[in-house]
Figure 1 (cartoon, rainbow, N blue to C red):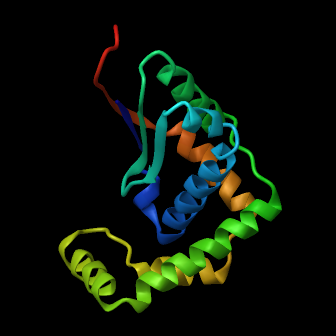
Figure 2: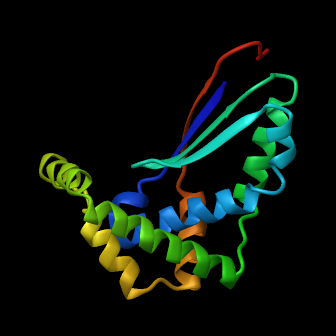
Amino acid sequence: YVRFHLISPLIQQSAENIVLFDTFVNILSHNLGEPAYEADVAQLEYKLVAGEYGLIIRVKGFNHKLPLLFQLIIDYLSDFSFTPAVFEMITEQLKKTYYNILIKPETLAKDVRLLILEHGRWSMIDKYQTLMKGLSIDALSAFVTAFKSQLFVEGLVQGNFTS
């Protein structure tokens, strides 16, 4: 089991940065779909999570091939690229995801409660409005470059691994 948290102060600076971060993580997951398929067949699992303060990478499975899967994820992260078509597809999916959160009373209530309790938190309404105004491809590219330049990493490795 390998878990790394790539933390960046950039994410919580604005609602637009949070939306750009969600877009980035979703495109990264989309890009990894085909190359990581063989790892899935070999009973290796991975998950990319857009955490509140950064990207969480979780990888688990048999230890002899786990570093290769982790390296694949890091390679795709460092050489991040996307097409305009993928960008449009992911932003449309995010619009639906945000809207579905807003129309459910229990998730909206949770979001409002956390907005009251946490200083500097951006509401789902802020994120949805930001996304509806439109994001640019250039803004995403600039965000990803800035994100990768301001990272702090925390990691945990458990299992049959040597140092």
